[in-house]
Image 1: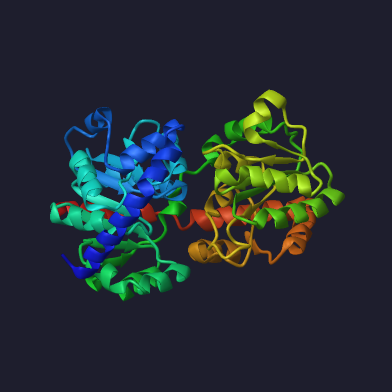
Image 2: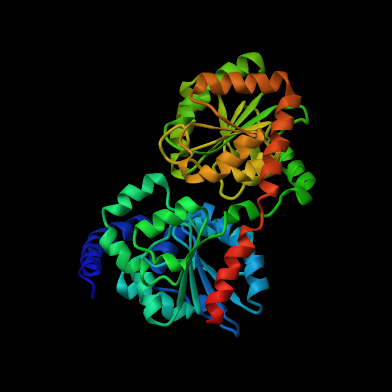
Length: 433
């Protein structure tokens, strides 16, 4: 065994031995956490094993959480078109990711938790799925899973691959181990030339690397069902057609403080405006609710709206899988993870809904989307709460300007669709070898 790989396993085994009891204690009172605990340690139910049977090439896609599940959904139809009769399986790491996967795939694809990256857990998962191809979405690089799959004769590929500016420096610190792992990957289908150069600099064989664009541009278009979706969201949030709504999606600590400061300014000029905040991590919901109160505003959790009806200017979205539909009622959107150095979050969903998008300076993880939408006139960088408030007030005073910016954001995305088909063709090529 490569010495770096051996050191990785020794460290991982030690950490696992220490954390496993605490993880079990945390999971024992929550059913979803129990399922996550069992499966991440390689204990999968018989029903899941049975659902993975049947003929056809088996393609195991791994997506860490909600964002990567969106990529998997975009790839579903192109993969089945390029590889007829294939059997897809999707794994995630987080509870939110698995809930989202099961919701959007609606039983079409078996969904489960990926194993923690230890030799015996990855072996159990590979024995259960028995894939012909292992597809790692975006930046999911797990040495044991990749190496074990490759040694078992499984073709391995990184699809919609991206290596952010923030991540590259961390990866370079462990380059010898990464280079050993990357040598076991058969294809790297990257988003951009910059991503391709970064993965090559980490040790990926250059001849296996290609650039095929961002499959997130191929996310399902909400417009065919926009009226039904909008009607559902209007009723849920208790909105009138003329009610201005500001949606802040996937916010990170402590962005909500800036949002609330901006909203207080907006509310002074347009008191009928509603703010819907969707924290990226649901465990932060109580803290966000507390901050709303401290800002002198009242709020409700979305999960309680059906029983209470909305009667506050602020709603905190504390459910999974509803943010995309919530964008349908927005006048404008803030993309979270960008006022803090987190690299930003997915701005494509609101853009597809024809909404103008605001974001902070940190959008490194979605730089290609930001550039496209910004150049088209649909994306706007805001440095702080005052600038955010000023732009929002301008749009509320001149709604036709916001409408035009939203249309530009959507148009910028539509002309760049097609990457999912190119990524799927890479898998077809691997299976034909």
